[in-house]
Image (cartoon, rainbow, N blue to C red; front, side, top):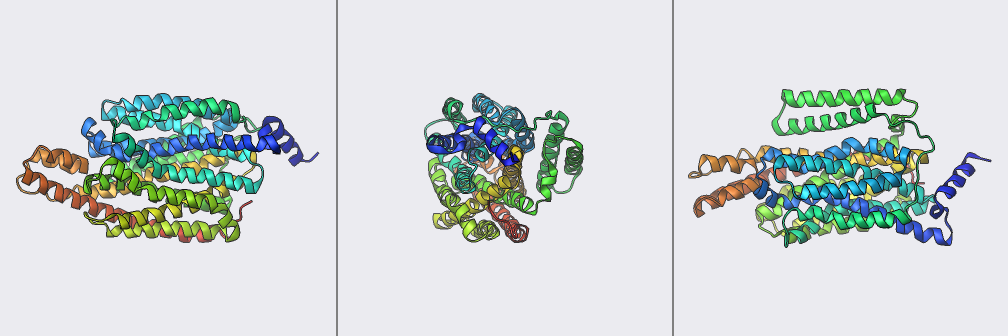
Length: 517
Protein backbone atom coordinates (compact mmCIF):
# COMPACT_ATOMS: atom_id res chain seq x y z
CA UNK A 1 0.00 0.00 0.00
CA UNK A 2 1.43 3.43 -0.98
CA UNK A 3 2.15 6.24 1.44
CA UNK A 4 -0.59 8.38 -0.17
CA UNK A 5 -3.12 5.58 0.25
CA UNK A 6 -2.24 5.25 3.92
CA UNK A 7 -2.51 9.03 4.42
CA UNK A 8 -5.91 9.13 2.72
CA UNK A 9 -7.15 6.21 4.82
CA UNK A 10 -6.03 7.96 8.00
CA UNK A 11 -7.69 11.19 6.86
CA UNK A 12 -10.96 9.36 6.28
CA UNK A 13 -10.79 7.70 9.68
CA UNK A 14 -9.99 10.92 11.58
CA UNK A 15 -12.13 13.24 9.48
CA UNK A 16 -15.19 11.69 7.85
CA UNK A 17 -16.33 15.08 6.63
CA UNK A 18 -13.17 15.53 4.61
CA UNK A 19 -13.61 12.29 2.77
CA UNK A 20 -16.06 13.77 0.32
CA UNK A 21 -19.40 12.24 -0.43
CA UNK A 22 -22.88 13.66 -0.17
CA UNK A 23 -22.86 14.23 3.58
CA UNK A 24 -19.21 15.22 3.95
CA UNK A 25 -19.31 18.22 1.60
CA UNK A 26 -21.98 20.32 3.40
CA UNK A 27 -20.43 19.50 6.77
CA UNK A 28 -16.98 20.75 5.85
CA UNK A 29 -18.38 24.02 4.47
CA UNK A 30 -20.22 24.54 7.77
CA UNK A 31 -16.93 23.83 9.53
CA UNK A 32 -15.24 26.42 7.30
CA UNK A 33 -17.86 28.99 8.33
CA UNK A 34 -16.99 28.37 11.98
CA UNK A 35 -13.27 28.68 11.29
CA UNK A 36 -13.57 31.98 9.45
CA UNK A 37 -15.73 33.29 12.29
CA UNK A 38 -12.81 32.72 14.66
CA UNK A 39 -10.42 34.38 12.23
CA UNK A 40 -12.79 37.31 11.75
CA UNK A 41 -12.86 38.16 15.45
CA UNK A 42 -9.07 37.99 15.80
CA UNK A 43 -8.53 40.31 12.83
CA UNK A 44 -11.37 42.64 13.84
CA UNK A 45 -9.77 42.99 17.28
CA UNK A 46 -6.57 44.23 15.68
CA UNK A 47 -8.27 47.25 14.07
CA UNK A 48 -11.44 47.86 16.08
CA UNK A 49 -9.38 49.78 18.63
CA UNK A 50 -8.57 52.49 16.08
CA UNK A 51 -12.00 54.11 16.35
CA UNK A 52 -12.09 53.72 20.13
CA UNK A 53 -8.77 55.54 20.52
CA UNK A 54 -10.22 59.04 21.13
CA UNK A 55 -12.64 57.68 23.78
CA UNK A 56 -10.00 55.51 25.43
CA UNK A 57 -7.58 58.45 25.47
CA UNK A 58 -10.13 60.64 27.25
CA UNK A 59 -10.95 57.93 29.80
CA UNK A 60 -7.56 56.36 30.61
CA UNK A 61 -5.29 59.34 29.75
CA UNK A 62 -2.41 57.31 28.27
CA UNK A 63 0.76 58.99 27.09
CA UNK A 64 1.59 58.89 23.37
CA UNK A 65 3.98 55.99 23.94
CA UNK A 66 1.42 54.09 26.01
CA UNK A 67 -1.16 54.62 23.27
CA UNK A 68 1.16 53.09 20.69
CA UNK A 69 1.71 50.08 22.95
CA UNK A 70 -2.04 49.70 23.49
CA UNK A 71 -2.43 49.72 19.74
CA UNK A 72 0.32 47.30 18.79
CA UNK A 73 1.15 45.01 21.75
CA UNK A 74 -1.72 42.72 20.72
CA UNK A 75 -0.12 42.07 17.36
CA UNK A 76 3.39 41.89 18.84
CA UNK A 77 2.42 39.03 21.15
CA UNK A 78 0.48 37.20 18.46
CA UNK A 79 3.46 37.46 16.11
CA UNK A 80 5.79 36.16 18.81
CA UNK A 81 3.64 33.15 19.70
CA UNK A 82 2.09 32.04 16.41
CA UNK A 83 4.85 29.64 15.40
CA UNK A 84 4.82 28.08 18.86
CA UNK A 85 1.04 27.74 18.91
CA UNK A 86 0.93 26.36 15.38
CA UNK A 87 3.39 23.69 16.42
CA UNK A 88 1.41 23.01 19.61
CA UNK A 89 -1.74 22.50 17.56
CA UNK A 90 0.09 20.02 15.34
CA UNK A 91 0.94 18.06 18.48
CA UNK A 92 -2.12 18.20 20.75
CA UNK A 93 -4.82 18.67 18.10
CA UNK A 94 -5.81 21.78 16.15
CA UNK A 95 -9.47 21.60 17.12
CA UNK A 96 -8.58 21.30 20.81
CA UNK A 97 -6.28 24.32 20.61
CA UNK A 98 -8.86 26.35 18.68
CA UNK A 99 -11.70 25.74 21.11
CA UNK A 100 -9.66 26.18 24.29
CA UNK A 101 -8.18 29.36 22.83
CA UNK A 102 -11.68 30.63 22.06
CA UNK A 103 -12.69 30.29 25.72
CA UNK A 104 -9.56 32.14 26.84
CA UNK A 105 -10.11 34.85 24.21
CA UNK A 106 -13.64 35.46 25.49
CA UNK A 107 -12.56 35.67 29.14
CA UNK A 108 -9.70 38.05 28.38
CA UNK A 109 -11.98 40.24 26.27
CA UNK A 110 -13.99 40.93 29.44
CA UNK A 111 -10.86 41.93 31.36
CA UNK A 112 -9.76 44.21 28.53
CA UNK A 113 -13.16 45.89 28.32
CA UNK A 114 -12.96 46.88 32.00
CA UNK A 115 -9.30 47.96 32.12
CA UNK A 116 -9.02 51.02 34.35
CA UNK A 117 -5.45 52.22 33.71
CA UNK A 118 -3.18 52.43 30.65
CA UNK A 119 -0.84 49.86 32.20
CA UNK A 120 -3.70 47.41 32.79
CA UNK A 121 -4.91 47.95 29.24
CA UNK A 122 -1.48 47.13 27.81
CA UNK A 123 -1.23 43.94 29.90
CA UNK A 124 -4.77 42.86 28.95
CA UNK A 125 -4.12 43.48 25.25
CA UNK A 126 -0.92 41.42 25.50
CA UNK A 127 -2.78 38.52 27.14
CA UNK A 128 -5.53 38.81 24.54
CA UNK A 129 -2.84 38.51 21.87
CA UNK A 130 -1.62 35.32 23.52
CA UNK A 131 -5.12 33.85 23.27
CA UNK A 132 -5.45 35.06 19.69
CA UNK A 133 -2.25 33.24 18.81
CA UNK A 134 -3.96 29.93 19.58
CA UNK A 135 -6.76 30.64 17.09
CA UNK A 136 -5.13 31.83 13.88
CA UNK A 137 -2.80 28.92 13.00
CA UNK A 138 -5.52 26.42 13.87
CA UNK A 139 -7.97 27.90 11.37
CA UNK A 140 -5.79 27.67 8.25
CA UNK A 141 -4.32 24.29 9.22
CA UNK A 142 -7.82 22.86 9.65
CA UNK A 143 -8.81 24.24 6.24
CA UNK A 144 -5.92 22.27 4.74
CA UNK A 145 -7.24 19.06 6.29
CA UNK A 146 -10.90 19.71 5.48
CA UNK A 147 -10.34 20.25 1.76
CA UNK A 148 -8.00 17.65 0.21
CA UNK A 149 -8.93 18.68 -3.36
CA UNK A 150 -6.60 21.47 -4.50
CA UNK A 151 -9.20 23.55 -6.38
CA UNK A 152 -11.80 23.23 -3.64
CA UNK A 153 -9.12 24.11 -1.10
CA UNK A 154 -8.21 27.17 -3.16
CA UNK A 155 -11.80 28.44 -2.91
CA UNK A 156 -11.85 27.71 0.83
CA UNK A 157 -8.57 29.59 1.31
CA UNK A 158 -10.04 32.39 -0.80
CA UNK A 159 -12.93 32.66 1.66
CA UNK A 160 -10.44 32.46 4.54
CA UNK A 161 -8.22 35.15 3.00
CA UNK A 162 -11.16 37.40 2.18
CA UNK A 163 -12.26 37.13 5.80
CA UNK A 164 -8.78 37.99 7.06
CA UNK A 165 -8.55 41.06 4.82
CA UNK A 166 -12.14 42.12 5.41
CA UNK A 167 -11.79 41.71 9.17
CA UNK A 168 -9.21 44.48 9.21
CA UNK A 169 -11.64 46.78 7.43
CA UNK A 170 -14.77 45.55 9.25
CA UNK A 171 -13.27 46.41 12.66
CA UNK A 172 -13.82 50.15 12.28
CA UNK A 173 -17.40 49.61 11.03
CA UNK A 174 -18.32 47.36 13.94
CA UNK A 175 -16.53 49.71 16.32
CA UNK A 176 -18.40 52.67 14.92
CA UNK A 177 -21.78 51.00 15.43
CA UNK A 178 -20.93 50.12 19.03
CA UNK A 179 -19.39 53.45 19.93
CA UNK A 180 -22.48 55.30 18.73
CA UNK A 181 -24.42 53.71 21.61
CA UNK A 182 -21.97 52.26 24.16
CA UNK A 183 -18.65 52.96 25.88
CA UNK A 184 -15.30 51.94 24.39
CA UNK A 185 -15.18 48.61 26.26
CA UNK A 186 -18.08 47.34 24.15
CA UNK A 187 -15.72 46.79 21.21
CA UNK A 188 -14.22 43.91 23.21
CA UNK A 189 -17.41 42.51 24.75
CA UNK A 190 -18.79 41.78 21.27
CA UNK A 191 -16.34 38.84 21.24
CA UNK A 192 -18.35 36.95 23.88
CA UNK A 193 -21.42 35.83 21.87
CA UNK A 194 -19.26 35.12 18.82
CA UNK A 195 -16.85 32.91 20.74
CA UNK A 196 -19.73 31.12 22.49
CA UNK A 197 -21.29 30.27 19.12
CA UNK A 198 -17.90 29.18 17.78
CA UNK A 199 -17.34 26.73 20.65
CA UNK A 200 -20.85 25.27 20.61
CA UNK A 201 -21.00 24.73 16.85
CA UNK A 202 -17.31 23.88 16.52
CA UNK A 203 -17.59 21.00 18.96
CA UNK A 204 -20.04 19.31 16.58
CA UNK A 205 -18.81 20.12 13.07
CA UNK A 206 -15.01 20.61 13.21
CA UNK A 207 -13.03 17.36 12.95
CA UNK A 208 -9.90 16.93 15.04
CA UNK A 209 -6.58 16.76 13.21
CA UNK A 210 -2.98 16.58 14.33
CA UNK A 211 0.43 15.60 13.02
CA UNK A 212 1.30 11.89 13.21
CA UNK A 213 4.81 12.98 14.26
CA UNK A 214 4.11 14.21 17.80
CA UNK A 215 7.44 15.05 19.33
CA UNK A 216 7.77 17.09 22.55
CA UNK A 217 6.86 20.78 22.54
CA UNK A 218 10.20 22.49 23.09
CA UNK A 219 9.70 25.27 25.66
CA UNK A 220 13.16 26.72 25.04
CA UNK A 221 12.22 27.27 21.39
CA UNK A 222 8.95 28.90 22.47
CA UNK A 223 10.83 31.38 24.65
CA UNK A 224 13.42 32.12 21.97
CA UNK A 225 10.70 32.75 19.38
CA UNK A 226 8.80 35.13 21.66
CA UNK A 227 11.87 37.06 22.81
CA UNK A 228 13.24 37.24 19.28
CA UNK A 229 10.10 38.56 17.62
CA UNK A 230 9.24 41.09 20.31
CA UNK A 231 12.84 42.25 20.64
CA UNK A 232 13.28 42.91 16.92
CA UNK A 233 9.93 44.65 16.52
CA UNK A 234 10.45 46.78 19.63
CA UNK A 235 13.90 47.76 18.41
CA UNK A 236 12.52 48.82 15.03
CA UNK A 237 9.73 50.75 16.74
CA UNK A 238 12.13 52.65 19.00
CA UNK A 239 14.50 53.37 16.12
CA UNK A 240 11.67 54.81 14.03
CA UNK A 241 10.30 56.85 16.95
CA UNK A 242 13.46 58.26 18.49
CA UNK A 243 16.30 57.58 16.07
CA UNK A 244 19.45 55.62 16.89
CA UNK A 245 19.92 54.98 20.59
CA UNK A 246 21.11 52.37 23.07
CA UNK A 247 17.59 51.15 23.91
CA UNK A 248 16.65 50.43 20.29
CA UNK A 249 20.04 48.87 19.59
CA UNK A 250 19.90 46.65 22.69
CA UNK A 251 16.37 45.43 22.00
CA UNK A 252 17.15 44.74 18.35
CA UNK A 253 20.38 42.93 19.21
CA UNK A 254 18.74 40.74 21.85
CA UNK A 255 15.90 39.93 19.46
CA UNK A 256 18.21 39.12 16.56
CA UNK A 257 20.41 36.94 18.77
CA UNK A 258 17.37 35.06 20.10
CA UNK A 259 16.12 34.42 16.55
CA UNK A 260 19.57 33.22 15.47
CA UNK A 261 19.71 30.77 18.39
CA UNK A 262 16.12 29.74 17.57
CA UNK A 263 17.07 28.88 13.98
CA UNK A 264 20.15 26.93 15.04
CA UNK A 265 18.10 25.03 17.61
CA UNK A 266 15.42 24.13 15.05
CA UNK A 267 18.07 22.74 12.72
CA UNK A 268 19.38 20.52 15.52
CA UNK A 269 16.06 19.24 16.90
CA UNK A 270 14.62 15.98 15.47
CA UNK A 271 11.08 17.42 15.84
CA UNK A 272 11.48 21.22 15.63
CA UNK A 273 8.81 23.80 16.41
CA UNK A 274 9.36 25.14 12.91
CA UNK A 275 11.22 23.41 10.11
CA UNK A 276 13.25 26.40 8.97
CA UNK A 277 14.43 24.43 5.94
CA UNK A 278 11.04 25.26 4.46
CA UNK A 279 12.37 28.74 3.72
CA UNK A 280 14.70 27.27 1.13
CA UNK A 281 11.56 27.14 -0.99
CA UNK A 282 11.78 30.42 -2.95
CA UNK A 283 8.01 30.60 -3.44
CA UNK A 284 7.29 30.24 0.26
CA UNK A 285 9.82 32.93 1.19
CA UNK A 286 8.41 35.29 -1.43
CA UNK A 287 4.86 34.65 -0.23
CA UNK A 288 5.78 35.38 3.40
CA UNK A 289 7.45 38.67 2.41
CA UNK A 290 4.41 39.68 0.36
CA UNK A 291 2.08 38.87 3.26
CA UNK A 292 4.08 40.93 5.71
CA UNK A 293 4.24 44.07 3.56
CA UNK A 294 0.64 43.88 2.32
CA UNK A 295 -0.66 43.84 5.88
CA UNK A 296 1.86 46.47 7.01
CA UNK A 297 0.39 48.94 4.57
CA UNK A 298 -3.24 47.99 5.12
CA UNK A 299 -3.28 47.88 8.93
CA UNK A 300 -1.17 50.99 9.37
CA UNK A 301 -3.44 52.86 6.98
CA UNK A 302 -6.68 51.80 8.65
CA UNK A 303 -5.45 52.42 12.20
CA UNK A 304 -4.42 56.02 11.55
CA UNK A 305 -7.13 56.90 9.04
CA UNK A 306 -9.66 56.18 11.79
CA UNK A 307 -8.05 58.93 13.85
CA UNK A 308 -7.86 61.26 10.82
CA UNK A 309 -11.56 60.84 10.08
CA UNK A 310 -12.63 61.53 13.67
CA UNK A 311 -10.10 63.97 15.05
CA UNK A 312 -9.27 65.93 11.89
CA UNK A 313 -12.47 65.78 9.82
CA UNK A 314 -14.71 65.60 12.90
CA UNK A 315 -16.75 62.60 11.78
CA UNK A 316 -18.64 60.38 14.22
CA UNK A 317 -17.34 56.86 14.95
CA UNK A 318 -20.07 55.31 12.79
CA UNK A 319 -19.37 57.68 9.89
CA UNK A 320 -15.66 56.93 10.15
CA UNK A 321 -16.30 53.18 10.23
CA UNK A 322 -18.57 53.29 7.20
CA UNK A 323 -16.02 55.42 5.35
CA UNK A 324 -13.61 52.47 5.52
CA UNK A 325 -16.15 50.05 4.04
CA UNK A 326 -14.62 50.19 0.52
CA UNK A 327 -11.54 48.34 1.81
CA UNK A 328 -13.71 45.47 3.07
CA UNK A 329 -15.70 45.32 -0.16
CA UNK A 330 -12.56 45.22 -2.29
CA UNK A 331 -10.90 42.56 -0.12
CA UNK A 332 -13.91 40.23 -0.10
CA UNK A 333 -14.62 40.56 -3.81
CA UNK A 334 -11.07 39.84 -4.92
CA UNK A 335 -10.32 37.26 -2.24
CA UNK A 336 -13.05 35.00 -3.60
CA UNK A 337 -11.67 35.03 -7.15
CA UNK A 338 -7.95 35.31 -6.38
CA UNK A 339 -7.24 31.58 -6.76
CA UNK A 340 -8.96 31.41 -10.15
CA UNK A 341 -7.10 34.53 -11.30
CA UNK A 342 -3.75 33.05 -10.22
CA UNK A 343 -4.43 29.86 -12.20
CA UNK A 344 -5.58 31.72 -15.28
CA UNK A 345 -2.79 34.32 -15.25
CA UNK A 346 0.09 33.56 -12.87
CA UNK A 347 0.78 33.55 -9.17
CA UNK A 348 3.49 36.15 -9.44
CA UNK A 349 1.35 38.41 -11.62
CA UNK A 350 -1.56 38.40 -9.17
CA UNK A 351 0.61 38.86 -6.06
CA UNK A 352 2.90 41.51 -7.56
CA UNK A 353 -0.10 43.32 -9.04
CA UNK A 354 -1.87 43.29 -5.68
CA UNK A 355 1.17 44.68 -3.89
CA UNK A 356 1.62 47.38 -6.53
CA UNK A 357 -2.05 48.36 -6.19
CA UNK A 358 -1.71 48.79 -2.43
CA UNK A 359 1.48 50.79 -2.96
CA UNK A 360 -0.13 53.15 -5.47
CA UNK A 361 -3.15 53.68 -3.20
CA UNK A 362 -0.87 54.57 -0.30
CA UNK A 363 1.02 56.91 -2.61
CA UNK A 364 -2.24 58.71 -3.37
CA UNK A 365 -2.65 59.44 0.32
CA UNK A 366 0.40 61.72 0.20
CA UNK A 367 -2.13 64.21 -1.23
CA UNK A 368 -4.14 64.29 2.02
CA UNK A 369 -5.05 67.66 3.48
CA UNK A 370 -7.02 68.63 6.57
CA UNK A 371 -10.07 69.22 4.35
CA UNK A 372 -9.71 66.22 2.03
CA UNK A 373 -13.08 64.88 0.93
CA UNK A 374 -14.27 61.27 0.74
CA UNK A 375 -13.63 60.58 -3.00
CA UNK A 376 -9.84 60.40 -2.56
CA UNK A 377 -10.09 58.42 0.67
CA UNK A 378 -12.77 56.05 -0.59
CA UNK A 379 -10.94 55.40 -3.86
CA UNK A 380 -7.65 54.71 -2.08
CA UNK A 381 -9.33 52.36 0.41
CA UNK A 382 -11.07 50.42 -2.36
CA UNK A 383 -7.79 49.91 -4.21
CA UNK A 384 -6.07 48.87 -0.97
CA UNK A 385 -8.77 46.26 -0.36
CA UNK A 386 -8.58 44.93 -3.92
CA UNK A 387 -4.80 44.64 -3.81
CA UNK A 388 -4.75 43.05 -0.35
CA UNK A 389 -7.47 40.57 -1.30
CA UNK A 390 -5.52 39.36 -4.33
CA UNK A 391 -2.11 39.27 -2.68
CA UNK A 392 -2.92 37.89 0.75
CA UNK A 393 -5.25 35.14 -0.48
CA UNK A 394 -2.88 33.78 -3.12
CA UNK A 395 0.16 33.87 -0.84
CA UNK A 396 -1.75 31.98 1.87
CA UNK A 397 -2.55 29.29 -0.71
CA UNK A 398 1.11 29.15 -1.81
CA UNK A 399 2.34 28.77 1.78
CA UNK A 400 -0.11 26.09 2.88
CA UNK A 401 0.34 24.12 -0.36
CA UNK A 402 4.14 24.19 -0.19
CA UNK A 403 4.48 21.91 2.84
CA UNK A 404 3.53 18.34 3.76
CA UNK A 405 0.10 17.97 5.37
CA UNK A 406 1.53 17.07 8.78
CA UNK A 407 3.30 20.46 8.91
CA UNK A 408 0.15 22.42 8.08
CA UNK A 409 -0.03 24.02 11.53
CA UNK A 410 3.55 25.29 11.44
CA UNK A 411 3.15 26.55 7.87
CA UNK A 412 -0.12 28.30 8.79
CA UNK A 413 1.69 29.90 11.70
CA UNK A 414 4.38 31.22 9.35
CA UNK A 415 1.69 32.79 7.17
CA UNK A 416 -0.08 34.37 10.10
CA UNK A 417 3.14 35.44 11.80
CA UNK A 418 3.81 37.49 8.70
CA UNK A 419 0.24 38.81 8.94
CA UNK A 420 0.49 39.84 12.59
CA UNK A 421 4.05 41.07 12.32
CA UNK A 422 2.93 43.21 9.40
CA UNK A 423 0.07 44.59 11.50
CA UNK A 424 2.39 45.36 14.41
CA UNK A 425 5.01 46.96 12.18
CA UNK A 426 2.36 48.92 10.32
CA UNK A 427 1.14 50.53 13.52
CA UNK A 428 4.62 50.84 15.05
CA UNK A 429 6.54 52.17 12.06
CA UNK A 430 3.87 54.37 10.53
CA UNK A 431 2.78 55.47 13.99
CA UNK A 432 6.32 56.33 14.96
CA UNK A 433 6.81 58.39 11.79
CA UNK A 434 3.54 60.23 12.44
CA UNK A 435 4.38 60.77 16.12
CA UNK A 436 7.89 61.99 15.31
CA UNK A 437 6.53 64.54 12.84
CA UNK A 438 3.58 65.51 15.01
CA UNK A 439 5.35 66.30 18.26
CA UNK A 440 7.48 69.05 16.71
CA UNK A 441 4.62 71.45 15.86
CA UNK A 442 4.89 75.03 17.06
CA UNK A 443 2.45 75.73 19.90
CA UNK A 444 0.45 78.97 19.34
CA UNK A 445 0.94 81.89 21.67
CA UNK A 446 -1.33 81.92 24.68
CA UNK A 447 -1.40 78.16 25.23
CA UNK A 448 -0.16 77.24 28.75
CA UNK A 449 2.88 75.01 29.04
CA UNK A 450 0.94 72.15 30.65
CA UNK A 451 -1.66 72.15 27.86
CA UNK A 452 1.09 72.31 25.23
CA UNK A 453 2.84 69.26 26.73
CA UNK A 454 -0.41 67.27 26.69
CA UNK A 455 -1.17 68.36 23.14
CA UNK A 456 2.21 67.12 21.89
CA UNK A 457 1.56 63.61 23.24
CA UNK A 458 -1.10 62.82 20.64
CA UNK A 459 -3.86 64.37 18.56
CA UNK A 460 -6.35 63.03 21.10
CA UNK A 461 -4.32 64.79 23.80
CA UNK A 462 -4.52 68.03 21.82
CA UNK A 463 -8.32 67.74 21.63
CA UNK A 464 -8.47 67.16 25.39
CA UNK A 465 -6.13 70.10 26.11
CA UNK A 466 -8.10 72.38 23.79
CA UNK A 467 -11.34 71.65 25.66
CA UNK A 468 -9.98 73.53 28.70
CA UNK A 469 -8.81 76.61 26.76
CA UNK A 470 -10.63 79.77 25.61
CA UNK A 471 -12.22 79.46 22.18
CA UNK A 472 -9.53 81.36 20.30
CA UNK A 473 -6.58 79.49 21.84
CA UNK A 474 -8.40 76.17 21.48
CA UNK A 475 -9.06 76.71 17.78
CA UNK A 476 -5.46 77.76 17.14
CA UNK A 477 -4.06 74.74 19.02
CA UNK A 478 -6.32 72.27 17.22
CA UNK A 479 -5.47 73.83 13.85
CA UNK A 480 -1.71 73.42 14.20
CA UNK A 481 -2.08 69.97 15.79
CA UNK A 482 -4.26 68.72 12.93
CA UNK A 483 -1.87 70.14 10.36
CA UNK A 484 1.04 68.36 12.06
CA UNK A 485 -0.86 65.05 12.23
CA UNK A 486 -1.79 65.20 8.54
CA UNK A 487 1.80 66.06 7.61
CA UNK A 488 2.99 62.98 9.49
CA UNK A 489 0.29 60.84 7.86
CA UNK A 490 1.37 62.01 4.40
CA UNK A 491 5.00 61.19 5.13
CA UNK A 492 4.12 57.76 6.54
CA UNK A 493 1.94 57.00 3.51
CA UNK A 494 4.78 57.85 1.15
CA UNK A 495 7.24 55.60 2.98
CA UNK A 496 4.72 52.73 3.07
CA UNK A 497 4.03 53.19 -0.65
CA UNK A 498 7.73 52.90 -1.46
CA UNK A 499 8.00 49.69 0.61
CA UNK A 500 4.98 48.11 -1.12
CA UNK A 501 6.21 48.95 -4.62
CA UNK A 502 9.63 47.48 -3.79
CA UNK A 503 7.88 44.36 -2.47
CA UNK A 504 5.90 44.07 -5.71
CA UNK A 505 9.16 43.99 -7.66
CA UNK A 506 10.63 41.40 -5.27
CA UNK A 507 7.52 39.20 -5.52
CA UNK A 508 7.72 39.25 -9.31
CA UNK A 509 11.13 37.59 -9.12
CA UNK A 510 10.73 35.40 -6.04
CA UNK A 511 7.45 33.85 -7.24
CA UNK A 512 8.71 33.11 -10.72
CA UNK A 513 7.40 29.72 -11.85
CA UNK A 514 5.21 29.31 -8.74
CA UNK A 515 1.86 27.61 -9.36
CA UNK A 516 -1.10 26.70 -7.20
CA UNK A 517 -1.92 23.04 -6.66
